[in-house]
Image 1: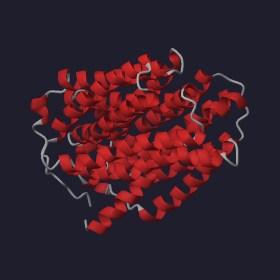
Image 2: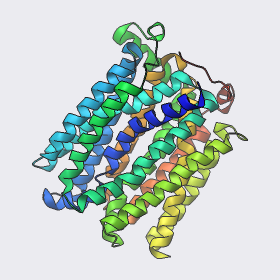
Image 3: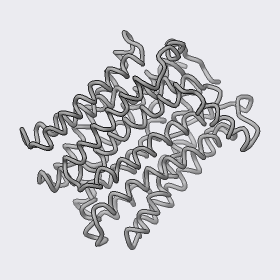
Image 4: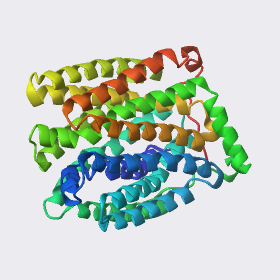
Length: 406
């Protein structure tokens, strides 16, 4: 694969994966407006985010194995089409129950983009090469959470929250065109899985019997939980508790995303000197320490908004180092069922995130409850990494393996 082909692949896959963060984050500045407009509660509105994450989790469990059987392109295009339909219907949602249901359908649709993009990378690369490509992919993908709240805020300056979902529908339609013409099939017929439901069950059983794989998936999920606790709670904390308006919130959220993406790119340099597991452990230790500081600053108010944001951004940077390496180590173990492995990985990440989103608001929508869930996610990920994942098993992964899949 030439550098030009690799760059095009990263751009296309980054654009496809970006639909997930955009669907999750673009409406965040409108959460208070949705609460008022649909005459509901803050917790109920946060559950619409949970619905999207549940859809992402369940969709990946179904679409991942399907993509191992029929190839990558067909499930991807069908999922994007479902996302477009759900987004259009969100524009006309009459109440919070309907909106929440449609958000689940949105999540199911974008699950195809998420799991297929990850499987395509695994079709072509593994080991440290996977981690490097995935880090570059996260650079492109990272533009989505940086731009999403800002784009949402800009839309809200001349339309209401329903216009955000109209924009998502248009974006989904554009991505269908991109995928149809720019993404080749990366899973040849000779490498596709056979055996129907029974084979899928056996694949999942084999993955779940791999202690190292399960541990790494849990690590990725718990790190993602910390991230989604921030995503779901930051709008209320920064706008209502600290008085930021929609545009200021978009800038603050984007600054945090810059730290996250900067860390993923620094990860590429670190991989030249350290193994993925060494970076992962160090990132989790740093993220846990930053999370504990976040609790202290949120509870005491010491330093005001500045120290709160600084500690938040440190947690995000640690997540930016952890999130490429945990999937890289996990996916390197199961090239024979990349779609199923990617599905389970993504399902756990977004499933745990779905739990963390309402958990952050269970005891209110303040900074302390958000900080506790964020710190808890990073600390739990560290514990799992140290106690569940056997290091000797990880040592068997060839860090330099890069295999062309076609």
